[in-house]
Length: 457
Image (tube, rainbow, N blue to C red; front, side, top):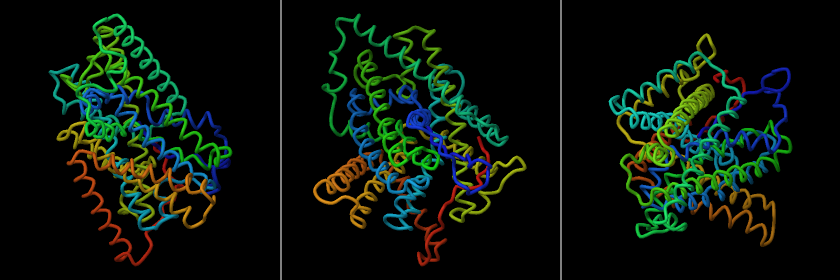
């Protein structure tokens, strides 16, 4: 699960000359699938099943509803701002307020800055379960050090590699689903086909809490708006691609959650953070479990490498444009923002003190905040410009985004209380910093530009 910004310049490489439109609908969809990362569902399935009271697929259904509404609103904004690459802070800054747009970017920074932490923590949890003699802390450091060093060197990752990793992940998932269905079909005393969706332990509050964490699995689809300048007919392509990617992952996650709860009913797991490994061993033996472990570790390492590079790029941009302290934009002789990369690596050490559920939750605080505001930005645009009149305009530009905002805000409120506290502290720090750089909110905040970025990946 990852988001990265694209640095390709137009032919000739002139900074600011614009980007060449080469991406088709299928290309954008494949990139979106690579960014979100299919195998993330196995990485977190035990946590979602535990939080939902054994109704993981229902939790994913609720999350999917929120993501579909939000993808629709992102698509609307991508249509309006189709001449340039954008993101949540751009849309909200243009449609609502530049100060609110800055704070949206600040909340998104919470995602970018700490997502590597969650990625490394998940990978470490699986290795610690497989090799209990090695402390969890050692595995966390083992992920952070090589990833940070490779990004400092400036290693390049290619789109082709991403595609191969996606194909491998889908193969692992396909085998996992087939083995689970085979074991369930061969066990006459097993649960009914609908039991994973609703059982005696199912409550709406548990479903909502699990759905709030499950949103972590979808993070990345919103990054497709950054491809606007490189996409053919972006006004139609980007919105369609976002809906397709969200629906693809919704079906994938619900399916995996369903078959998992068929072979392991209920919410009790010896190790929820690494439950997929035990289930893989139960349905496919040690060889298949090793296969899944390899996929998870390789996927988490590659994902962490890419996300740390993308996050350091965002810190570099914000430092260069005056939104964050200038030293964050300092480059090494290799053209990599050393301080930004190292800072993200050090943030990963927080994994020594928190678990996967808590860390994923406070990341989702930033995501749900941005998602809620993007839905509201669509309504604000309609109120100012009336792009479509009558009942149809109210439905498409007000009702649907309002429903998205309500669902997103509801899930935000259902996050772990510690995550909400961390998120609110982060927001207060953002408001204080905004007040400082705008001289008491009397000046507009700096606008971020994504030109002349360093080559990080």
